[in-house]
Image 1 (cartoon, one colour):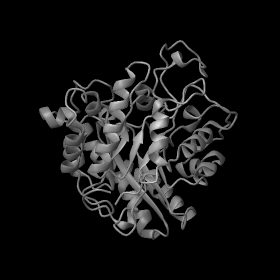
Image 2 (image 1 turned 30 degrees about the vertical axis):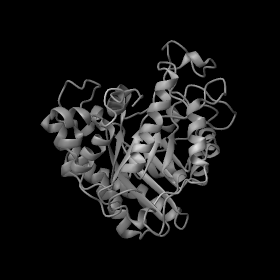
Image 3 (image 1 turned 180 degrees about the horizontal axis):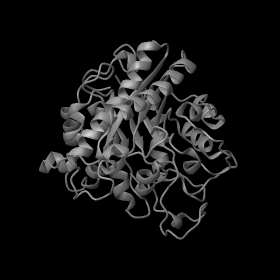
Image 4 (image 1 turned 90 degrees about the vertical axis):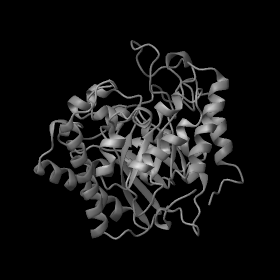
Length: 382
């Protein structure tokens, strides 16, 4: 994922239907087929430019709706950092208060069917559990996710909306660095298992107390180093943590598999199979409880031909495999090509090119691809 890790670890701040058992309750049963706009989505976070005078969170949301998607991935943690343009965020001492903020209320009132939200509990750094987690910390983690899930289940009942609460790329989080050559410690592995199960316990508690009534709240982990485990047996979240959890879903930030696409186009599907083999099944999604939480390619660094091969390959493979969601990274590019530039930028060359829309307001080929896909007549899958 293309987000600054150091701030997350030290301050808890982040800037940055196929086969199997997908259940009707998740909107994917045989009698309730999902349409592509309810599967294929886009991330909107920390773009380095804006194109309107709307508040930045909802500017991006409106662009994604115009694309034809009803699935959006946003950063729920520290939104003043991720959505600063044209916005004045008030203090938000709890996750419930964040959900109640005017900008998120406006977002949640829009006609999206699924909101995938990057969440961390309040009051401590994101990786506080890396040296172990106490029973008291697990209870507080559970409480905060219970409160948020209960609020969403109560406030948005009978709306048909789904909320997926997930963390950011876990294989970097468990290491406290981007160094994939450093194995996660036993303490970090054990701490992450307790942390994830506590978050899930909070969501479960809310669902038991407030029976879902036309609204769903799920919890997910996110893996991002899968190929090294699959091919070399390296210890990562996928094979040291997931088997000991009982989560609704797991997100795959699929940069590793899609990077090697040119050498072996089968790796991405193999990675989905490997994740599913290590991920316990869930009641709502069965053995197809793996979704693509991130994939993309920087347009300023790769030839157009490669982009036009890679993006459809990932979408088509994930669709045929049975992923409940496929989320593209992202709407507006969040990575500067030269770090000394000051956002908002206006030049297309000022960013790396993780985009559907460029700084000059023009639409990229990826916009045209997704627009055609999402607005075609044959977009329902069973």
